Image (cartoon, rainbow, N blue to C red; front, side, top):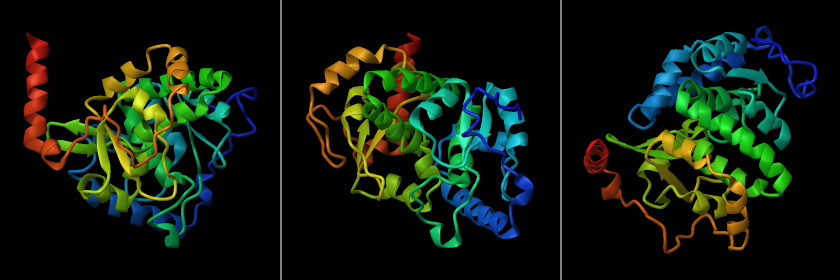
Length: 291
C-alpha cells in the first residue's frame, strides 16, 4: 500500500499490523463473511457482488490492507488507509477526495455479531470497499469527499451527512431483477439485509436529493425509510451541481422525521418492486433512450 505522507493527517493513519490478529478474530470474520454470503445472494446488487469477487475477499480470515489496496488501485485508483476508529469530518472528506478509504482495524466480538453502533473492519471492508471497484461509484465517493470539504465551510454538514447515510450506508437500487441492496450499513447487517427488502413496515421512496438532505435518520435501529436509486450514475449526477444554492433552499424548509411521508414522495409498494414490474419499467426507459 502506498505510504501516507507525513503532512496528510498522519496522526489519524496507523498500521494495520495484520500479523497481530488472533485466531479468534479471524474466526469471527469467517463467521460474519459466510453468514452474509448466504444472505446476500439475490439481495445485494450485482456491482457489489462483482466487486467482492474481484477483490478476492474471502472467508479465509481478515484481509491484509496492502493486498487489497493493490487490487483497488489497479481497478479505480483507490486505496485503503488504516485508522483507529471514526475520524473527524474534515479528515474523512479529505481522504475520500484523494481516493483513499479510511478503514478501522478492529473486529466486533461474538456478542456483537448482529449489531454494532461503531463501524468495524467487517463493515468497512465487506460493506464499503467492494463498490469502490465500480468506476462510477468510485467517482461518486470522490465527489462526495470534495463536496464534504466545501460543506464544512458552509455550515451544512448535517445535510451532506444525510446524503451519505441514505445512499452509501443504507441505499437501495432498482434493477431488472427487483430491488437490491448497495448500502454498506445494510450489506454488513444480517438482520437489515432481510428487513429492508421483505418487511412491509419501512417506506421505500424514489431518490430525490433535496428530500434526502432534509430527512433525519436513526442510528440505533433499522431504518424507517429507504431511498431507491435507478443507477449509480444517478448518484454521480446528483453530486455535479453546486450544492450551495440547494443548501440555502432546504435551510428554509423544516426537517423531515425518519418515518414521515410527504406529498411529493414516490413511494414503492410491494408490487412496484416486483422483479417483473421493475424489469418492464426499466425496459421502457431503455427503449425510450434508444429512440
